[in-house]
Image 1 (cartoon, rainbow, N blue to C red):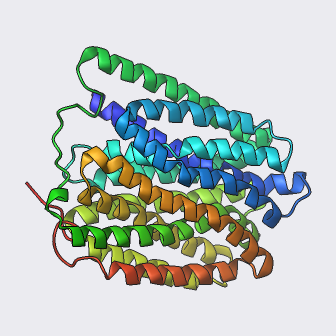
Image 2: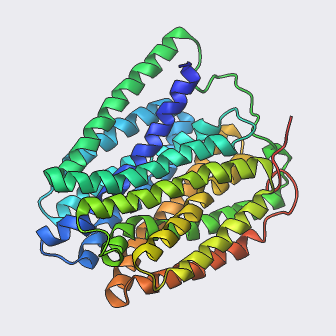
Image 3: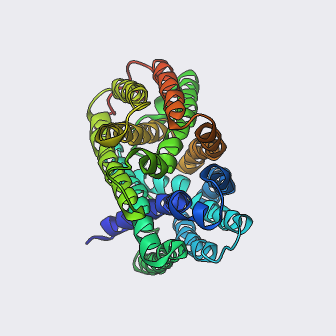
Length: 404
Protein backbone atom coordinates (compact mmCIF):
# COMPACT_ATOMS: atom_id res chain seq x y z
CA UNK A 1 0.00 0.00 0.00
CA UNK A 2 1.36 3.43 -0.94
CA UNK A 3 2.02 6.00 1.78
CA UNK A 4 -0.75 8.21 0.40
CA UNK A 5 -3.30 5.41 0.68
CA UNK A 6 -2.07 4.40 4.11
CA UNK A 7 -2.36 8.01 5.26
CA UNK A 8 -5.93 8.10 3.92
CA UNK A 9 -6.67 4.89 5.82
CA UNK A 10 -5.46 6.45 9.08
CA UNK A 11 -7.68 9.48 8.40
CA UNK A 12 -10.66 7.22 7.80
CA UNK A 13 -9.99 5.17 10.94
CA UNK A 14 -9.87 8.43 12.88
CA UNK A 15 -13.33 9.39 11.62
CA UNK A 16 -14.62 5.92 12.47
CA UNK A 17 -13.37 6.14 16.04
CA UNK A 18 -14.48 9.75 16.51
CA UNK A 19 -18.15 8.91 15.99
CA UNK A 20 -17.92 5.57 17.76
CA UNK A 21 -16.65 7.14 20.99
CA UNK A 22 -19.27 9.90 20.97
CA UNK A 23 -22.12 7.37 20.85
CA UNK A 24 -20.98 4.66 23.27
CA UNK A 25 -22.84 6.37 26.09
CA UNK A 26 -26.06 6.61 24.06
CA UNK A 27 -26.38 2.82 23.99
CA UNK A 28 -25.01 2.35 27.52
CA UNK A 29 -27.58 4.80 28.91
CA UNK A 30 -30.51 3.39 26.95
CA UNK A 31 -29.86 -0.30 27.59
CA UNK A 32 -28.08 -0.69 30.92
CA UNK A 33 -26.92 2.30 32.96
CA UNK A 34 -30.33 3.85 33.66
CA UNK A 35 -31.51 0.59 35.19
CA UNK A 36 -28.26 -0.06 37.06
CA UNK A 37 -28.15 3.40 38.60
CA UNK A 38 -31.91 3.61 39.24
CA UNK A 39 -32.46 6.59 36.92
CA UNK A 40 -34.82 7.25 34.03
CA UNK A 41 -33.48 7.54 30.50
CA UNK A 42 -34.62 11.18 30.38
CA UNK A 43 -32.77 11.95 33.62
CA UNK A 44 -29.53 10.26 32.57
CA UNK A 45 -28.87 11.47 29.02
CA UNK A 46 -28.31 15.16 29.92
CA UNK A 47 -25.05 14.06 31.56
CA UNK A 48 -23.73 13.56 28.02
CA UNK A 49 -24.22 17.28 27.31
CA UNK A 50 -20.78 18.47 28.56
CA UNK A 51 -19.09 16.05 26.17
CA UNK A 52 -21.01 17.37 23.19
CA UNK A 53 -20.38 20.97 24.25
CA UNK A 54 -16.65 20.21 24.30
CA UNK A 55 -17.05 18.41 20.96
CA UNK A 56 -18.30 21.68 19.47
CA UNK A 57 -16.30 24.35 21.28
CA UNK A 58 -13.04 22.43 20.93
CA UNK A 59 -13.24 22.56 17.13
CA UNK A 60 -12.07 26.18 16.94
CA UNK A 61 -8.83 25.84 18.95
CA UNK A 62 -8.14 22.47 17.33
CA UNK A 63 -8.44 23.92 13.83
CA UNK A 64 -6.31 26.95 14.71
CA UNK A 65 -3.54 24.86 16.30
CA UNK A 66 -3.56 22.44 13.36
CA UNK A 67 -3.16 25.26 10.82
CA UNK A 68 -0.40 26.91 12.87
CA UNK A 69 1.42 23.82 14.16
CA UNK A 70 0.81 20.39 12.60
CA UNK A 71 -2.28 18.58 11.41
CA UNK A 72 -0.49 15.22 11.78
CA UNK A 73 0.59 16.07 15.30
CA UNK A 74 -2.95 16.98 16.26
CA UNK A 75 -4.22 13.69 14.84
CA UNK A 76 -1.79 11.76 17.06
CA UNK A 77 -3.07 13.72 20.07
CA UNK A 78 -6.61 12.79 19.01
CA UNK A 79 -6.02 9.04 18.83
CA UNK A 80 -4.16 8.77 22.13
CA UNK A 81 -6.21 11.33 24.06
CA UNK A 82 -9.64 10.00 23.17
CA UNK A 83 -8.55 6.43 23.89
CA UNK A 84 -7.17 7.30 27.32
CA UNK A 85 -10.27 9.37 28.15
CA UNK A 86 -12.55 6.46 27.27
CA UNK A 87 -10.66 4.09 29.53
CA UNK A 88 -10.87 6.59 32.40
CA UNK A 89 -14.62 6.99 31.80
CA UNK A 90 -15.03 3.27 32.50
CA UNK A 91 -13.99 3.98 36.10
CA UNK A 92 -16.98 6.28 36.73
CA UNK A 93 -19.17 5.46 39.71
CA UNK A 94 -21.69 8.31 39.54
CA UNK A 95 -23.44 10.48 36.94
CA UNK A 96 -21.10 13.40 37.69
CA UNK A 97 -18.03 11.24 37.19
CA UNK A 98 -19.30 9.85 33.90
CA UNK A 99 -20.13 13.40 32.76
CA UNK A 100 -16.50 14.38 33.42
CA UNK A 101 -15.28 11.37 31.45
CA UNK A 102 -17.57 12.21 28.55
CA UNK A 103 -16.31 15.81 28.72
CA UNK A 104 -12.74 14.58 28.18
CA UNK A 105 -13.84 12.31 25.33
CA UNK A 106 -15.63 15.23 23.68
CA UNK A 107 -12.63 17.54 24.04
CA UNK A 108 -10.33 15.14 22.19
CA UNK A 109 -13.07 14.15 19.72
CA UNK A 110 -13.29 17.85 18.72
CA UNK A 111 -9.88 17.56 17.07
CA UNK A 112 -10.87 15.23 14.26
CA UNK A 113 -13.27 17.13 12.00
CA UNK A 114 -11.40 20.42 11.47
CA UNK A 115 -8.09 18.57 11.18
CA UNK A 116 -8.95 15.31 9.44
CA UNK A 117 -11.30 16.76 6.83
CA UNK A 118 -8.79 19.45 5.87
CA UNK A 119 -6.26 16.66 5.29
CA UNK A 120 -8.74 14.61 3.25
CA UNK A 121 -9.47 17.39 0.74
CA UNK A 122 -5.94 18.83 0.57
CA UNK A 123 -4.68 19.04 -3.02
CA UNK A 124 -7.78 17.44 -4.55
CA UNK A 125 -9.89 18.94 -7.32
CA UNK A 126 -12.91 16.65 -6.92
CA UNK A 127 -13.58 16.34 -3.22
CA UNK A 128 -17.01 14.67 -3.16
CA UNK A 129 -15.91 11.02 -3.34
CA UNK A 130 -12.93 11.29 -0.92
CA UNK A 131 -15.16 13.08 1.59
CA UNK A 132 -17.87 10.49 1.00
CA UNK A 133 -15.49 7.59 1.64
CA UNK A 134 -14.25 9.30 4.78
CA UNK A 135 -17.85 9.97 5.76
CA UNK A 136 -18.77 6.31 5.35
CA UNK A 137 -16.10 5.42 7.88
CA UNK A 138 -17.55 7.98 10.28
CA UNK A 139 -21.04 6.60 9.85
CA UNK A 140 -19.82 3.05 10.26
CA UNK A 141 -18.41 4.26 13.56
CA UNK A 142 -21.95 5.30 14.47
CA UNK A 143 -23.22 1.89 13.36
CA UNK A 144 -20.57 -0.12 15.16
CA UNK A 145 -21.03 1.93 18.34
CA UNK A 146 -24.54 0.56 18.78
CA UNK A 147 -23.66 -3.04 17.88
CA UNK A 148 -20.32 -3.23 19.70
CA UNK A 149 -21.62 -1.48 22.79
CA UNK A 150 -24.66 -3.73 22.95
CA UNK A 151 -22.47 -6.83 22.59
CA UNK A 152 -19.95 -5.69 25.21
CA UNK A 153 -22.79 -4.82 27.61
CA UNK A 154 -24.20 -8.33 27.29
CA UNK A 155 -20.83 -10.08 27.57
CA UNK A 156 -18.69 -7.94 29.87
CA UNK A 157 -20.73 -5.06 31.27
CA UNK A 158 -20.98 -1.41 30.34
CA UNK A 159 -17.47 -0.51 31.54
CA UNK A 160 -15.98 -2.87 28.97
CA UNK A 161 -17.77 -0.86 26.26
CA UNK A 162 -15.45 2.07 27.06
CA UNK A 163 -12.22 0.13 27.73
CA UNK A 164 -11.96 -1.96 24.55
CA UNK A 165 -12.32 0.89 22.01
CA UNK A 166 -10.02 3.05 24.17
CA UNK A 167 -7.19 0.53 24.02
CA UNK A 168 -7.64 0.11 20.26
CA UNK A 169 -7.46 3.88 19.67
CA UNK A 170 -4.25 4.24 21.67
CA UNK A 171 -2.71 1.44 19.58
CA UNK A 172 -3.71 3.14 16.32
CA UNK A 173 -2.29 6.43 17.63
CA UNK A 174 1.07 4.76 18.29
CA UNK A 175 1.06 3.28 14.78
CA UNK A 176 0.21 6.65 13.21
CA UNK A 177 2.97 8.38 15.18
CA UNK A 178 5.47 5.85 13.79
CA UNK A 179 4.06 6.42 10.30
CA UNK A 180 4.52 10.18 10.61
CA UNK A 181 8.08 9.85 11.94
CA UNK A 182 9.03 7.53 9.09
CA UNK A 183 7.60 9.93 6.54
CA UNK A 184 9.60 12.84 7.94
CA UNK A 185 12.79 10.81 7.75
CA UNK A 186 12.24 9.64 4.18
CA UNK A 187 11.35 12.94 2.54
CA UNK A 188 10.80 16.64 3.12
CA UNK A 189 7.27 17.73 4.01
CA UNK A 190 4.56 15.80 5.79
CA UNK A 191 2.93 12.52 4.72
CA UNK A 192 -0.20 13.10 2.72
CA UNK A 193 0.39 16.84 2.77
CA UNK A 194 3.57 17.77 0.88
CA UNK A 195 4.69 21.33 1.45
CA UNK A 196 4.56 22.24 -2.21
CA UNK A 197 1.17 20.70 -3.00
CA UNK A 198 -0.83 23.08 -5.18
CA UNK A 199 -4.24 24.28 -4.20
CA UNK A 200 -6.55 22.57 -6.68
CA UNK A 201 -9.89 22.31 -4.92
CA UNK A 202 -11.50 24.62 -7.36
CA UNK A 203 -12.44 28.19 -7.31
CA UNK A 204 -12.19 29.73 -3.85
CA UNK A 205 -10.22 32.68 -5.18
CA UNK A 206 -12.78 33.26 -7.95
CA UNK A 207 -15.76 33.59 -5.60
CA UNK A 208 -16.85 37.14 -4.92
CA UNK A 209 -17.45 38.30 -1.36
CA UNK A 210 -21.24 38.44 -1.69
CA UNK A 211 -21.44 34.88 -2.98
CA UNK A 212 -19.04 33.68 -0.28
CA UNK A 213 -21.16 35.28 2.44
CA UNK A 214 -24.35 33.90 0.97
CA UNK A 215 -23.01 30.34 0.69
CA UNK A 216 -21.39 30.47 4.13
CA UNK A 217 -24.74 31.57 5.61
CA UNK A 218 -26.45 28.58 4.02
CA UNK A 219 -23.69 26.28 5.29
CA UNK A 220 -23.99 27.57 8.85
CA UNK A 221 -27.78 27.38 8.91
CA UNK A 222 -28.14 23.96 7.30
CA UNK A 223 -25.27 22.66 9.40
CA UNK A 224 -26.99 23.79 12.59
CA UNK A 225 -30.38 22.32 11.71
CA UNK A 226 -28.75 19.23 10.25
CA UNK A 227 -26.90 18.79 13.53
CA UNK A 228 -30.21 18.71 15.41
CA UNK A 229 -31.60 16.01 13.12
CA UNK A 230 -28.35 14.04 13.12
CA UNK A 231 -28.11 14.04 16.92
CA UNK A 232 -31.78 13.24 17.42
CA UNK A 233 -31.57 10.22 15.15
CA UNK A 234 -28.14 8.79 15.99
CA UNK A 235 -28.31 9.31 19.76
CA UNK A 236 -31.94 8.29 20.26
CA UNK A 237 -32.22 5.43 17.74
CA UNK A 238 -31.27 2.63 20.20
CA UNK A 239 -34.00 3.85 22.57
CA UNK A 240 -36.46 4.33 19.70
CA UNK A 241 -35.90 0.73 18.64
CA UNK A 242 -36.08 -0.45 22.24
CA UNK A 243 -39.61 1.00 22.36
CA UNK A 244 -40.86 0.36 18.84
CA UNK A 245 -39.27 -2.98 17.91
CA UNK A 246 -40.39 -4.87 20.99
CA UNK A 247 -41.44 -7.95 18.99
CA UNK A 248 -38.17 -8.02 17.04
CA UNK A 249 -35.54 -7.11 19.65
CA UNK A 250 -35.40 -8.69 23.09
CA UNK A 251 -31.83 -7.99 24.20
CA UNK A 252 -29.25 -5.22 24.18
CA UNK A 253 -27.35 -7.01 21.43
CA UNK A 254 -30.49 -7.28 19.27
CA UNK A 255 -31.43 -3.61 19.72
CA UNK A 256 -27.84 -2.58 18.98
CA UNK A 257 -27.79 -4.88 15.97
CA UNK A 258 -30.90 -3.36 14.39
CA UNK A 259 -29.59 0.15 15.05
CA UNK A 260 -26.25 -0.79 13.51
CA UNK A 261 -27.99 -2.24 10.45
CA UNK A 262 -29.89 1.00 9.90
CA UNK A 263 -26.74 3.10 10.42
CA UNK A 264 -24.80 0.89 7.99
CA UNK A 265 -27.47 1.35 5.32
CA UNK A 266 -27.36 5.08 5.95
CA UNK A 267 -23.59 5.12 5.61
CA UNK A 268 -23.91 4.11 1.95
CA UNK A 269 -25.62 7.44 1.32
CA UNK A 270 -22.32 9.28 1.54
CA UNK A 271 -20.91 7.30 -1.38
CA UNK A 272 -24.02 7.95 -3.46
CA UNK A 273 -24.24 11.63 -2.59
CA UNK A 274 -20.46 12.13 -2.93
CA UNK A 275 -20.62 10.79 -6.49
CA UNK A 276 -23.67 12.91 -7.30
CA UNK A 277 -22.17 16.22 -6.13
CA UNK A 278 -19.01 15.56 -8.15
CA UNK A 279 -21.04 15.06 -11.34
CA UNK A 280 -24.30 16.97 -10.92
CA UNK A 281 -25.66 20.20 -9.47
CA UNK A 282 -24.96 20.29 -5.73
CA UNK A 283 -27.98 22.52 -5.21
CA UNK A 284 -30.34 20.01 -6.85
CA UNK A 285 -28.89 17.09 -4.88
CA UNK A 286 -29.18 19.05 -1.63
CA UNK A 287 -32.83 19.93 -2.29
CA UNK A 288 -33.67 16.28 -2.97
CA UNK A 289 -31.95 15.12 0.25
CA UNK A 290 -33.66 17.75 2.41
CA UNK A 291 -37.08 17.06 0.91
CA UNK A 292 -36.78 13.34 1.59
CA UNK A 293 -35.78 14.04 5.20
CA UNK A 294 -38.95 16.03 5.81
CA UNK A 295 -41.18 13.39 4.22
CA UNK A 296 -39.66 10.40 6.04
CA UNK A 297 -39.62 12.07 9.46
CA UNK A 298 -43.32 12.87 9.06
CA UNK A 299 -44.03 9.28 8.03
CA UNK A 300 -42.22 7.87 11.10
CA UNK A 301 -44.40 9.61 13.71
CA UNK A 302 -46.69 6.63 14.49
CA UNK A 303 -44.81 3.66 13.03
CA UNK A 304 -43.59 0.56 14.87
CA UNK A 305 -42.31 -2.91 13.99
CA UNK A 306 -40.98 -3.71 10.50
CA UNK A 307 -42.42 -0.52 9.01
CA UNK A 308 -40.51 1.59 11.55
CA UNK A 309 -37.30 -0.32 10.76
CA UNK A 310 -37.66 0.31 7.01
CA UNK A 311 -38.52 4.00 7.34
CA UNK A 312 -35.69 4.48 9.87
CA UNK A 313 -33.26 3.10 7.29
CA UNK A 314 -34.65 5.63 4.83
CA UNK A 315 -34.33 8.69 7.02
CA UNK A 316 -30.84 7.70 8.20
CA UNK A 317 -29.85 7.41 4.52
CA UNK A 318 -30.76 11.04 3.84
CA UNK A 319 -29.55 12.38 7.22
CA UNK A 320 -26.12 10.89 6.57
CA UNK A 321 -26.36 11.95 2.94
CA UNK A 322 -26.43 15.64 3.92
CA UNK A 323 -23.01 15.52 5.61
CA UNK A 324 -20.73 15.41 2.53
CA UNK A 325 -22.77 18.13 0.84
CA UNK A 326 -21.90 20.68 3.54
CA UNK A 327 -18.26 19.55 3.55
CA UNK A 328 -17.98 19.86 -0.23
CA UNK A 329 -19.43 23.38 -0.04
CA UNK A 330 -16.71 24.33 2.47
CA UNK A 331 -13.98 22.88 0.26
CA UNK A 332 -15.27 24.86 -2.75
CA UNK A 333 -15.21 28.27 -1.05
CA UNK A 334 -11.98 28.02 0.98
CA UNK A 335 -8.23 27.92 0.44
CA UNK A 336 -6.05 25.27 2.07
CA UNK A 337 -4.16 27.69 4.35
CA UNK A 338 -7.26 28.49 6.41
CA UNK A 339 -9.56 25.56 5.58
CA UNK A 340 -9.16 23.87 8.99
CA UNK A 341 -10.51 27.00 10.65
CA UNK A 342 -13.57 27.14 8.39
CA UNK A 343 -14.24 23.46 9.01
CA UNK A 344 -13.86 24.28 12.71
CA UNK A 345 -16.60 26.93 12.44
CA UNK A 346 -18.84 24.47 10.58
CA UNK A 347 -18.38 21.76 13.21
CA UNK A 348 -18.55 24.21 16.09
CA UNK A 349 -22.04 25.00 14.90
CA UNK A 350 -22.93 21.34 14.31
CA UNK A 351 -21.75 20.04 17.64
CA UNK A 352 -23.00 22.99 19.66
CA UNK A 353 -26.47 22.29 18.35
CA UNK A 354 -25.95 18.58 19.01
CA UNK A 355 -25.08 19.33 22.63
CA UNK A 356 -28.18 21.47 23.13
CA UNK A 357 -30.30 18.79 21.48
CA UNK A 358 -29.79 16.24 24.27
CA UNK A 359 -31.98 18.06 26.83
CA UNK A 360 -34.54 18.57 24.06
CA UNK A 361 -34.63 14.84 23.33
CA UNK A 362 -34.97 14.09 27.04
CA UNK A 363 -37.76 16.64 27.53
CA UNK A 364 -39.78 15.64 24.46
CA UNK A 365 -39.43 11.94 25.27
CA UNK A 366 -40.57 12.45 28.85
CA UNK A 367 -43.51 14.66 27.90
CA UNK A 368 -44.84 13.31 24.60
CA UNK A 369 -42.69 10.42 23.40
CA UNK A 370 -40.69 10.05 20.21
CA UNK A 371 -43.65 10.77 17.92
CA UNK A 372 -43.43 14.46 18.83
CA UNK A 373 -39.66 14.40 18.20
CA UNK A 374 -40.24 13.22 14.64
CA UNK A 375 -42.73 16.06 14.07
CA UNK A 376 -40.06 18.55 15.17
CA UNK A 377 -37.50 16.99 12.83
CA UNK A 378 -39.92 17.09 9.88
CA UNK A 379 -40.35 20.82 10.43
CA UNK A 380 -36.60 21.46 10.70
CA UNK A 381 -35.89 19.46 7.55
CA UNK A 382 -38.37 21.70 5.75
CA UNK A 383 -36.30 24.64 6.99
CA UNK A 384 -33.19 23.11 5.46
CA UNK A 385 -34.99 22.74 2.13
CA UNK A 386 -35.96 26.42 2.21
CA UNK A 387 -32.40 27.53 2.99
CA UNK A 388 -30.91 25.51 0.13
CA UNK A 389 -33.07 27.48 -2.28
CA UNK A 390 -30.75 30.43 -1.51
CA UNK A 391 -27.72 28.71 -3.06
CA UNK A 392 -26.58 29.97 -6.48
CA UNK A 393 -28.13 28.03 -9.33
CA UNK A 394 -24.92 27.95 -11.38
CA UNK A 395 -21.17 28.12 -10.91
CA UNK A 396 -18.62 25.95 -9.12
CA UNK A 397 -20.12 26.53 -5.67
CA UNK A 398 -23.53 24.97 -6.16
CA UNK A 399 -23.24 23.56 -9.67
CA UNK A 400 -20.83 20.98 -11.00
CA UNK A 401 -17.20 21.21 -9.85
CA UNK A 402 -14.69 23.00 -12.01
CA UNK A 403 -12.82 20.55 -14.25
CA UNK A 404 -9.34 20.78 -15.54
